[in-house]
Length: 585
Image (cartoon, rainbow, N blue to C red; front, side, top):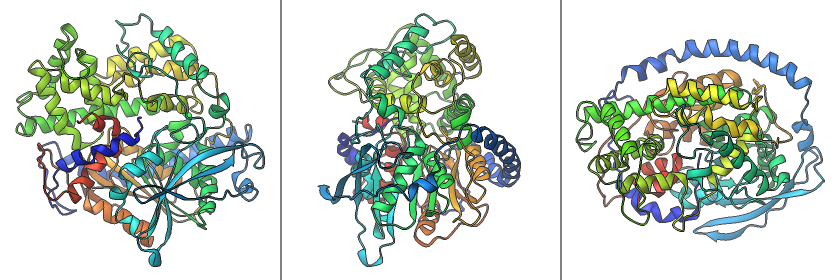
């Protein structure tokens, strides 16, 4: 949900602080004490769930096809041949990277009409003689930057793949360094999509007004043209244009989180134009775009499950958790939230505002994006328990994108606006979201803020994108098999979404990581990394049912002299939740 800016390059020294043991891919070790039986059962049950998902996807796909015939979109396969291919004038720009600007059609149904400019960066392959081509990467969002992120940590995260691939990223429309980046100019903590105080049935005052103010600010402060043409489908069309611009006959792609929706859209629109697609941390593409409230309910349940996993690990490993909560960290957490709401906890440092229960919940919900962040969460909770809210304040500010001068990074603005322009919200009735929020409050102890009440601005948003693709998300049997990677306890894109995406795409293979955190590739598991790299380099599809153990321990970290492997492991945390990591100063 957040973006990364260039200031994060200074954090790489911090990232050396994590350690990785050597554990085989098939190891049964469970160093955290959290329940492991479901990991094995989930992977083994994938085949049955997948067959059920195929039948459901077929039924829904047939229905969606009828809907789409009444609301046709441009035929991207026909348009692609008529699109002028931009010339990329590469210049050196940052530590071995090259940068360029690509002028692409604003509207692909008029490919020779007005253009929009996209920022592009690449890290050339180290082994030019064995070069395969370009590997396009997307770190998620919607609204996440690729250019700043790739330049900040791409050389290390993709060190192995960079041997034979140019690593290429582009900022999607309305994002980062591309033309007219979205910025609603809001205080994210008090005015944004996840503003505090979080709305509850007991705290409804100003609920509708705050939602309308958010919508009005985003419409007032941004180009309607940018919003209207910033659909994910246009992002896929842009990526195909850039594929041609870098001289690749077929696309190679690695997408994380929301980047899996971009990849699934690309595969559906251009089934003959890719050689390898990896979709890591997969969304249920049909649910995300057509039934977003269902998607957020599933995600919210994933947040709660992941927080429970942290509490279980804390109870089993009090040394790693610094003694927080003893035998019942869950109860200790809830008690801490209640005490902070009754009497906010003093903080020091550059921003000494006291922290309340909402701050603690927000920090915990962001920390569970990566298992590598569990030690930092334990540190913050213990300090708050002992009367010092400084770490919670720092990490809450980081997750909201608060800058030292009190302004805010627009990452959450972009997440909101780019979701609102294309997700199918059919109601603008306040009562609909009051009912949904009340239900979420009843169902979820901590992550209730993620669905229901927070969706009202999405339902009210008046600008709707052109050129949206709503499915069916399906590729050709003659196309290369897509590799979908799912993590069994992923909080943001729960594992069953990966199973459902495999079913929707039909010609796809599921690779499972048994573990925690959002997405898998890049230092979580040597087994996962090897499988992904073999697929991208050689086209080797893992055997059906392949499952790998996560190899990230839960332990308080220490600085290491040998940092290369450790930093790469920590970078998976940076990629999963860059704003939270930014606060680990």
